[in-house]
Structures are given as structure tokens and as C-alpha cells.
Image (cartoon, rainbow, N blue to C red; front, side, top):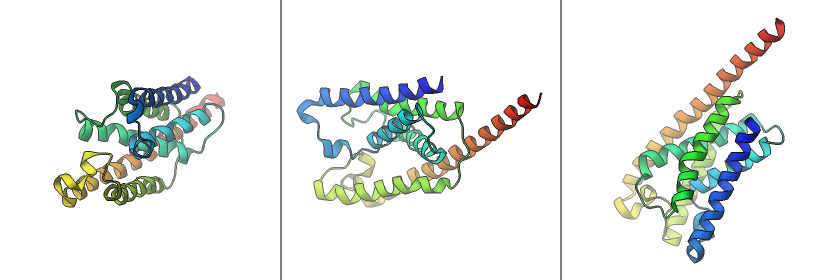
Length: 195
């Protein structure tokens, strides 16, 4: 069941990416495409899922994938839904809704103990710096709420603080839930073996 779920995650992300390239055609710009947090988080989750279908993957790596996908889903739901981010419908649905849900379900079904959840925050921070440095150079930002040309840097800062708070809360939650469920499962297995 878990292996099938992981393969489904990988295949869905792969299908969405191929679909994007085909539908966008000449409009597909690799440099900009791979500057979306959604794309990076989905690709990371897809690789982790594929590896996890065949061998054990570090709980820390799995937890990071869950965090990034959960944040992708929530940020889309609260900040981007209804905004045209130039993503074809199928890919939009898969990358922003379906895969984040499947990755979260997979974590709940196969939880693991994690430590130092705050390390997971280094990637989003690096992504923010990359985006704000690259944006003025190329004249393009992946998301409206990160574009200071619209409402200024103060607005971007406020939104980024909000998103950072979401990241911190979710990182703690992913680690706490995974650890608690893993402990509960371990106790249950020990109890069953003792009978």
C-alpha cells in the first residue's frame, strides 16, 4: 500500500511536468519553471517517493518533503487560488492539491521520528533569498505576493513573514505528529509481539 502510494506520487508529478512542457510548448521557459517553489518541492517529493518505494529513506529527508508539500498546498489555497500563475489546469491540480494531500497521507500511514525540524527551514529561506535577488535581475517573480513592483517591499515582507510562520508551525507539526505516531506504532507492535 505504502509503496503504491509513493509510486503514485512519483508518477503524478512526472505526468504533470510532462504535461506542462507539452502544453506550454514554446512558452516553456526552464529557468523560470524551475524557479517556482511548487515545482522544486514537487520534484523533491517525487524523488523521495521513488526512492522510498525501493529502499529506506532518511526520516529527516521524508519529513522535509512533507513540510514542503504541505506548505505548497496551503500557500496555494490561501494566497494563490484563483490567481493565474500560468499553469495548465491538470498540472495545477496535481502539483498544488493532489500530491500535497498524498504526501501528507503517506506520512500519516508511515510515520517516523524526526529531530532538528528547524533544519528543514533552510531550503525555504534559501529559496526566498534566491527569488528576491533573481527577480530584479531578470524582471520576473514566480508569485505575485513576492513581487515588490506591485505593492512594494513592505507588502512582500509582511507576506513572507506570514509564510515563514506557516513554515515554522508546519515543520513543528510534521515532526511532532510523525514522532508521536511512530512511538504509538512502536508501542503497539511491541505489545502485539508480547502477546
